[in-house]
Image 1 (cartoon, rainbow, N blue to C red):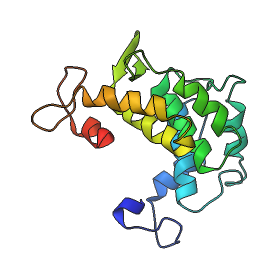
Image 2 (image 1 turned 60 degrees about the vertical axis):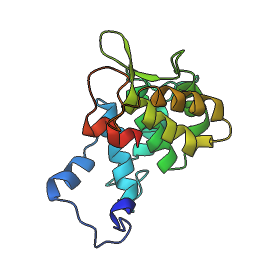
Image 3 (image 1 turned 60 degrees about the horizontal axis):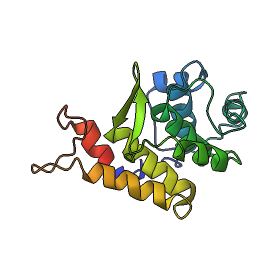
Image 4 (image 1 turned 90 degrees about the horizontal axis):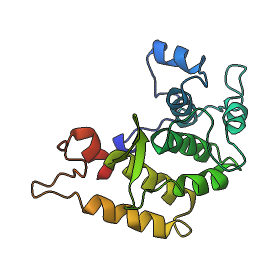
Length: 177
């Protein structure tokens, strides 16, 4: 929101009514929607710990296992959004979640998504770099640097990034950049 020059905390920033309605009925059944909703509520200047009678922060923190993994996720591509949400509400669970997420790096430095197995993914790797940088850049510098090296290995002459061999796409390029 800030990159667009908007101030989400001002009440002049409006979303369509359907989206606001969806924020009032977030469910942990979809970790991605749930965690992105918490971030959206925070960006809008509202409190996800007390949003329309619901405590989404408590629900999210309840999904964090003792080891920092997130119940209901299938890999870093989903866990990273839980970390973003925890960071957005200044949760005490950021540290343990970031530590677990950092441990999920593949040998080549990439972070992965699960689709009938683990697949290294440029976009997920870029998201995790950002999330770990926010959590504690100094602590996670070795993991972040290795992830950067992985991404740089996929740099193509045309300026795109493609470690997977599927060709660059706008979503992946924006995440990596």
